[in-house]
Image (cartoon, rainbow, N blue to C red):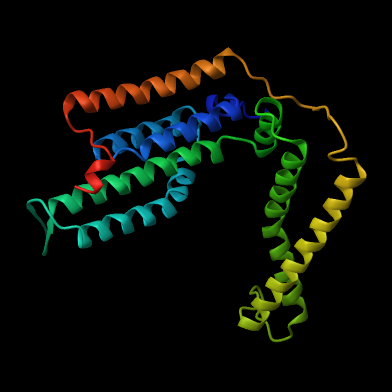
Length: 262
């Protein structure tokens, strides 16, 4: 069985990718019309599917928390922001200003969330921290600390399952194939998980100190290259964003943050 070849977004240098995502996210905060973030969100989702090869199911599930928060923004603005012509939504009549601003903020949330998914779903954490250490001059002590914390977080689900199975073995009243669900058992499992995480973090600290972390310059076993294609890709993405803004200005739908106080 051959290994899966990395996608275009996975090959993109993580430092340049992170900088591009931060620039786009910051720029999105200045836009308050619904058309611009909706178009940007659709383009980002298309890039995740086509260039990142992210499964549709994974992308849909990852959008759930952003969708919930976006829905709350829409509802709050529709209910609390008066002004504009009346818009009939079934049994409700709301103001056009609240509906427009709420939809803009909701779509902006989806767009920023999709940008974060570009970084989360198509970037290897080790490769990201290595690239930041090489190209963004992030200190080695920071990169190793973040990687150690990431490793602990990744191990938590398996540790939780192990603790819960151990509880089930010791519980004579359990049903076959079911784990204990009482508040006492869940609290004991959470406490055991916390204690185990603290102990593992102590062992990691000792291991890093014993290897001389922070004692001087360190080499990298697997350097992450930064080439012209990475910069060209970032320039193309920012140029596309600029073109979208220019089209919005010409078409007249682009609105800035001044609309929030209008």
